[in-house]
Length: 302
Ligand SMILES: C[S@@+](CC[C@H](N)C(=O)[O-])C[C@H]1O[C@@H](n2cnc3c(N)ncnc32)[C@H](O)[C@@H]1O
Figure: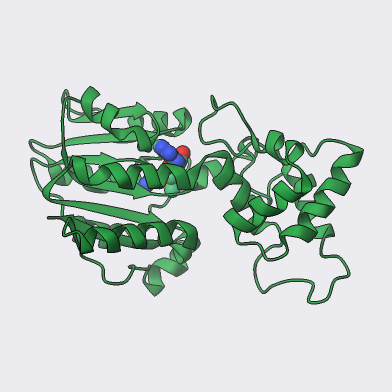
């Protein structure tokens, strides 16, 4: 029978397995369990005797992961709706004080991106939402219509590294003078309009709204704050010899991880197992376009 579950092809599975090197009896914390793709590859390797603790902010993803990974013997698989930045609480609930392996696979997954009702993609018309956690108070719609022109420009620049942030913010404010910007397609149109007739109408392969959507998603979900909070706590909860892996998808995230690991190396807390970030091989890049911007860094707790 055909599998009707939403598809999300996990990235960099082979290097993750090689560098994390999971083995029986180990405890894993997966901070972004998503549809359970990495979990499905790692979990069998920590059995028997191991435990897999996975969290996600998105109930819908957790339900799919649960179905995909279960059933397991009692205590082996613990899945929680939680922010990975709050992971110590999840470890406590799972009855453990420290873990052997930690994994973050940041950003949005394909099922979320392709669901128009989640509002993550400018290619699919839907409400401007972009929350991983649908119980969170503020949506992208609120943010786009609440911020001043200057605040919008700063946000696009800071979280999207968007060079034309001022021009785009001005156009968005012009559009919203008529009515609130409620949909992904109207926001994408406003961004496109900022470039109509301008010289060098636009940059290579990137859609003009790419960076604006990224910036809003990062802001709405406090993505960089969460990553920073997680990294600051991680060393205290990783057993000596334990390993930490982070897959990031843009340079703001990768920059944070890189700086953190450099500091940890100087402090003698971690040894980097990836001198440079690992990227997808040609074959994976062809098969799974999402892997093209993925960067993996792995380090061992000393
Ligand atoms: C790229 S996907 C992970 C895919 C997963 N590794 C797999 O193989 O199926 C990222 C997931 O992280 C979740 N997420 C993002 N920020 C989070 C946070 N702060 N805490 C917990 N989950 C988060 C998203 O909801 C999304 O499901």
